[in-house]
Amino acid sequence: MTAKATFGAGCFWGSEVAFQNVPGVTATTVGYEGGSKPEPTYEDVCSHTTGHAEVVQIDFDPAVTSYNAMLDVFWNNHDPTTLNRQGPDIGTQYRSAIFYHDQEQKELAERSKELVAASGRFKRPIVTEIVPASTFWVAEDYHQQYLEKRGLASCHI
Image (cartoon, rainbow, N blue to C red; front, side, top):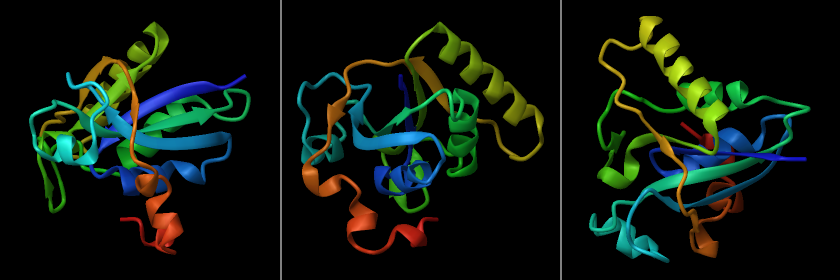
């Protein structure tokens, strides 16, 4: 049995790499979620008119790893205090977002956000949105395992 987790944490290339090597992760797929345009392309999403975020969807084995472990990877691999921006990437498609798949994930995500905010780790408020998962649109093939295909997976920021 596998479970799903979906996160927006800036450019999906780097986000995907962050999750690929976690024990218990069985698959990662990059795509688009959270917007209104059906079957968006990368160009559509970059036009800032679709409302979609670049996301990574993770399939994981809950007997090996937990959703909380997925949340830890999420919080540790991007800046959740920058609104619609990660590093040099600017736009709503780069927003920090947790797309929960059930009530338990929602509660765990909200609790983890509270804990991260209270930890003092970040000097600014956390702007991560926690929203229900919607239709996940798989990104074009050339985006899948993009950094790994180019021998850059170890260069993840």
